[in-house]
Amino acid sequence: MNFVEIIMKYGAQAIFAFGLSVVFIFVAVKIFPKIGLMDRPWRYGLNRKAIPYYGGLAMFLAFIISVFCFVDLNPQVWGLLLGAFIIVVVGFLDDYLNLSPLVRLFAQFVAAVLLVHFGIVIFSINIPLLGVISFSSPLVYGFAVLSAAFTIVWVMTIVNVMNFLDGVSGLNSGVAFIAGLTLFFLSINQGLHADPVAQANLGVIALIVSMVALAFLIFDFPPAKILMGDTGSTFLGFVLATLAIFSGGKVATAFLVLGIPILDMIWVVLRRIFSGQKFWRGDLKHLHHRFLDFGLPAWGVVLIYLGVSAFFGFSAVAMASSEQKMFMVVGLVVLMLLLAVSLVFLPNKKSE
Image (cartoon, rainbow, N blue to C red; front, side, top):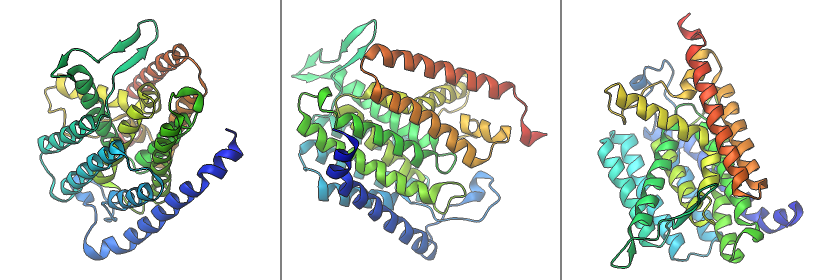
């Protein structure tokens, strides 16, 4: 399918999802200040005026309506929508009431279990040099325990990766746009799937979430006019994690696109644990914060992340073998290490 054919077949869905999202987000920017749905910058030591918050509500609403309009609502899609609803509700309550981390993690666990219940599971992964690793056994009452466990861990990890990424406006929406678009192109590649029709249906969901994220990026790019909050960041993480599972098992590709945020989260969690801190307690020591400390403007940090994500994501689309993807994963890890080391030793411009 060439570019013109893709535009002809999927252009209407993309325009509808993007346009609807722009309208809802624009309304939110105007209405939220009047009803008190604003952020609280003083909580984080930020010296700026409050801006509209809870933008994830507008994203979710546009996503749901677009899916209802263009997607075949089979049981797996319903599982995705129900799980996303749980994530959004708890994310909103957390933004508004500052819930306990355990409550948030439990809600993510429930949403992931719901996916497993609807048959959205990771049965195997293909690792170059090691081959295919299957999670289809052991079976307990006919239930693949390892498969379910790996799926739950994957979903909860990506949800929190996207949540951790929400430290600079524009990062979450930009990375989600690239990740969704990457999964879309993989899903509509008929040569990769035994059931191209079903994958094309899932590809529409990936296209919708990418357009919703792109619309939010317009308002979210520094300086932000609205913030998505945990309501939006966890919603995007949940949808992307789910699409990576049932859009042809693109877990490796999702890892490439989200590689820098994933590796950053691993590093931050380990650092907190070894320093005796609670790993779920936020701080300002993520990679994107180090970029800011070094003196880069917020928009510059966003462009760096988007450039890296786009390079690895679209490289994954163009690659034919899992061995090539493994080389890209190794390259990603090396890049992350180089960035981390350089930012640790380079002078902190804000402290000078």
